[in-house]
Amino acid sequence: MSVVPKKTGTCVSSMIPELANVPEDILAELNQICQVRKLDAGQVLTDAGDAFDTVGFVTDGILRMQKTLPDGRQHVVGLLVPGDMFGRVFDGPMQFALEAAIESTLLTFRRNLFEALLSRSPALDRIILLQFLTEIDRSRDWMIVLSNPRVRGRLAGFLLTLCSRFQTVENLFGTMNGRLTVRIPISRADVAHLLGARPESISRAFHALADDGLLEIIRPDLVAIDSL
Image (cartoon, rainbow, N blue to C red; front, side, top):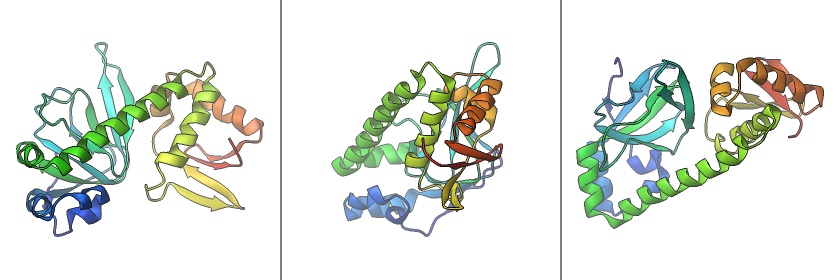
């Protein structure tokens, strides 16, 4: 892996605002052990099953969570955006591969060092617990999106998720003639994996939403949204 870690001189709490609430001594130690990693689009952070000794937070960009099936097919099962945590504390290897969907910046910690701080700080422990609970809530919301029997309904739910949860990702949103433009940060094949559909079904769903006047397809990865 060609990821080059770089010691950060930036305060942890400025990159992950939630960490500003931990005691100053714990925050100082977090600053001492943190590293900044930058990933190019398509660069793999870890493969499923690896003994991944890192935990951290996405501070910019998007990470893909991927699962390889026994027949070799790869499925995107989730996306991590700024503020999301990755890695498994007090646990075994990662169950999913992590790969940068676009150019991304991560704030990382050696897992054993982070776990030691976590054991000593109830405030830090609470933040991590809230991260996990938030992820569970998002998974439940995503189940509602996937439960829609029509692909166009699932696609509309995905676009709504982009417009809400992905607001902190740079260069995804703009305006055109008074309408919101949204850049789709993953390929049509990845969208299909997320939504449990075939790429051609996703393409038809985009055109169905366009035919109904809900959006305009500017290019395959860029749409202008009127309403959903």
